[in-house]
Image (cartoon, rainbow over all chains, first blue to last red; front, side, top):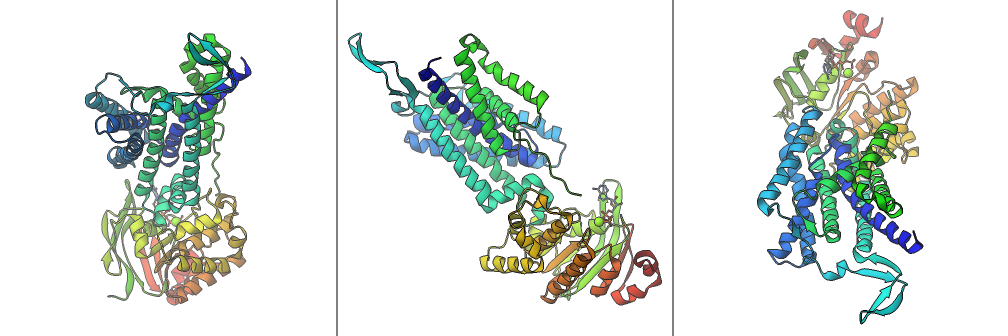
Length: 313
Length: 238
Ligand SMILES: Nc1ncnc2c1ncn2[C@@H]1O[C@H](COP(=O)(O)OP(=O)(O)OP(=O)(O)O)[C@@H](O)[C@H]1O
Ligand SMILES: [Mg+2]
């Protein structure tokens, strides 16, 4: 692999990894608080893309406004999923919550089929075309087929750069919220001890709802960036990114936000690099994440940043 | 308005099939220190947990300033002015000492008041000030106990319930904690105190209840309880 190729692959990997990280954070925050794997998370990701698509194509709002609408819609959807599906069974055994989560996921996918049809739609014309262009560094100009073209050089898709910058900014904001606001402190407290947090006068259900909304907003942002990169919408588009982000969360140590980010980046870069170095393995790209899952679960189930519980008697 | 800040009438609480409280009634007059003593498993923690809204009674009434509060969620009960320092400290292990204290004043919006309360807590337990930035889970057991009491004080409650505040503290600190409880009480905070250290609890309280396997078997002024032969034998080790 040439140096140019390596850089291209690395940036690509970081950008895909950023998307996994954005989704993984939602899994890990909800798990941290409720010890629940929110299987519907990937479907919130999908719904956000549809919100964006219809805001532009049906309601003709400007594309930047559609982003705001879609992200707010995803946050609201996440909040409602908790209120309607999970809150009523808060004190039920965990297996009930898990089954409910799978049910919510099926429900949202089926709802999307009914509302938006199962036929794939193109996201290509929804956003301005500059997002689909390439930045070319280096290379030399040549005339080919009567046109000026640049040959060689490092080619970086604009969306790759935008994805990395957006993700960094969003995670920074999340960090501020979780570690420097009162509500963020309450979120961390809830993840440690729900009854004691409520003794402090905290409305725990509101904090849980806020956590769902925040995680879903991040998944929504991830979904839109994803759809710009892979411009095809369909009701099951959230499944694979969702599962991979979940694996990234496990890899990083579920419950840890920092772990989810690290896990997402590692998974993204490894996936791209494997294909880059061993093109013959390209067909197994998606299976690779599962291999990682198996290795993590058998070698270090608590993940890279998994916390050991501090207990004092 | 009656002179009782808290009144419990015929309270029954179960854990599944286990009857933990079998119809207890008690009164906490405003401005006083009231103590509940009883053997392990008598139902003391169950009583304060139910008042704080963590458990729902199957029968009976809890009145706070003459208003029924049983059935309210615990955060609303906290907003009314009832604070509980729970059994076993329940410090947030991965929040710093300062954050733990800030959790105590979570629902207060008065910044100046929060600052003042923080000063009071730090004066009471200077150790906490030294360790402000340390994670709660890394404090020693005794330091965690100070933090739990300080945290409960931070919501400036009108009724403060302390479930075994002296547990795990060195004798000199036990005295300090009891002093601070009296001091808080002088500032107008009504206190419901649960203690294994019955002698000390009865010395600072005005009235005591003896709880035995879910029933109140004795209720008298603390002075009388201190000289009661049954209490002496069972709790004072005399
Ligand atoms: N979560 C629970 N599930 C079942 N039974 C419980 C539970 N908590 C308490 N109990 C039972 O209820 C009874 C009262 O317990 P409680 O904790 O109120 O006692 P206590 O007076 O605080 O005792 P101690 O002095 O040991 O703290 C005990 O018999 C106890 O075993
Ligand atoms: Mg107890």
